[in-house]
Image (cartoon, rainbow, N blue to C red; front, top):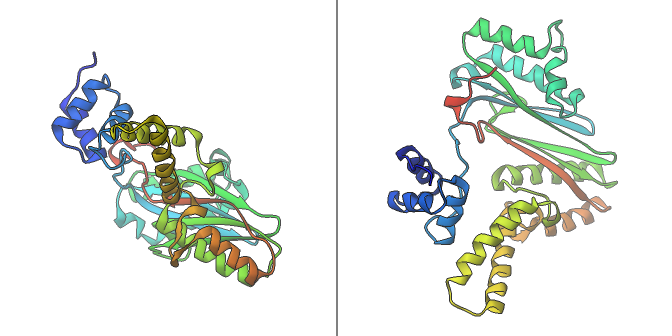
Length: 299
């Protein structure tokens, strides 16, 4: 039997919003397994949803760079927002984003790449900036998308400078349609992704483990109704459809017109563009997402 500490109980309460005693019971029932305890609380109706651990926002900037039919995102962290507003730091973040297009989503390759206009690598440039400003920094992650035909649209939320902000999105639209229409619609989809934070483009590309976990929780909840197994199964399938509407891009209500879905908006855009449109992928970087800043001491 695992020892249930006060810290464990507090962490579970922070993640779920459940009561202290309920959190203690959940951990005891699941031998201290945090994720299993979250599911136990959800199944009992004591937590609405699992919150990501460590959502204390790291500071810094999301950087965005686009080049014709490709685009890249980077997250460059600093200890304070004061440094993120420093022009020198912003110039470094912009340069890293520019180099990220050629790195094509490979973080190790990006760190070893030459900083634009300089002789040092990006890894060494970050180290030099740490020495200059006197604050810990890190290039945390990068992402890349490209299309053969169509466009990679982008959006930066809470922009502090061109291509720099707090939430960055890139989304790939494969199509032979009218470029101007594609770019305009792509920008709308990117803004939607920034606001709605989907997990996948469609149900087929949603992580199967995520689906299985959600189904297990919903099944436990439905069983509590006392209804027969066939009815329970129908209840679970209905609730899964609602879950998909929350996390799957094409199934979500379009933020620009909540009366329609993103899938329907794509169909309407196809008419305007004069050709089929397929959303082949997207990335959404929110500054500090999933980072426990107190534990993030690497550079």
